[in-house]
Length: 255
Ligand SMILES: NC(=O)c1ccc[n+]([C@@H]2O[C@H](COP(=O)([O-])OP(=O)(O)OC[C@H]3O[C@@H](n4cnc5c(N)ncnc54)[C@H](OP(=O)(O)O)[C@@H]3O)[C@@H](O)[C@H]2O)c1
Image (cartoon, rainbow, N blue to C red):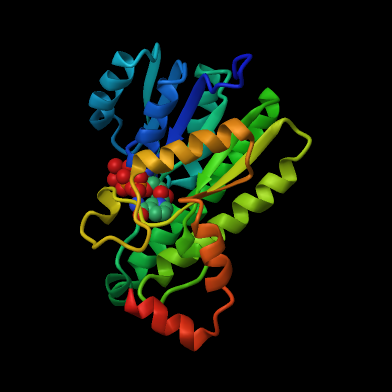
């Protein structure tokens, strides 16, 4: 349960190795968060992060195996986590794969696998988390989507379409939870310098995982339903979404 000042005291990160996710838990640790559960494909690789969090004052750090691409496992894995940690204030859905549009075109099965991770796996785990938050009577599911879902680009439309679907899912789930005590916060970052984008040149308004984490923490504190990171992307995409397709194609190709 959040403390009297509304500070988050416990968080579960799905995709626990995410640089944005780790920056977020580190920022929350500075604000009295005392329980962190990192759930990822290779939990043993997260030990150094766990050590950092303990040094920052987090009293309980749990590393758990979780595969977004295995929806059939989600109910059991998440129910066990909630039973081991009966009072989770926030669940941050941070897993995702970017992939490569040309590689997806050459191997459509790999594109479908990315869609399973980014979308189907988020639908499955998101629905289970929503039910568990409803049962405990409080808690926020923060879902990291992307501005790539705001308008499809020819050079990354497989990824962009998974994020568009995820964003719509998260909005609808949030609306369905109104009045239950549980809530959903959609997080829409632009280009963030993490291992996911390490091979790429900076996109427009590129930012850092720490800056996105600060926006997420601020959004959790204010009870926002949507967080753009950086915030100026909101008016920018308000305009970009209205551009005629030929102009958008040219603009997207020139970046
Ligand atoms: N970086 C950007 O520019 C940017 C912009 C907008 C949105 N986003 C979104 O922000 C989220 C976090 O990304 P990030 O930038 O922090 O990149 P990141 O450090 O690469 O984090 C992505 C995480 O997803 C995990 N993951 C991938 N497939 C998984 C699976 N099947 N099961 C469980 N975990 C899985 C990865 O696990 P492993 O460590 O095992 O590989 C990794 O820890 C993603 O949803 C991404 O799409 C990123």
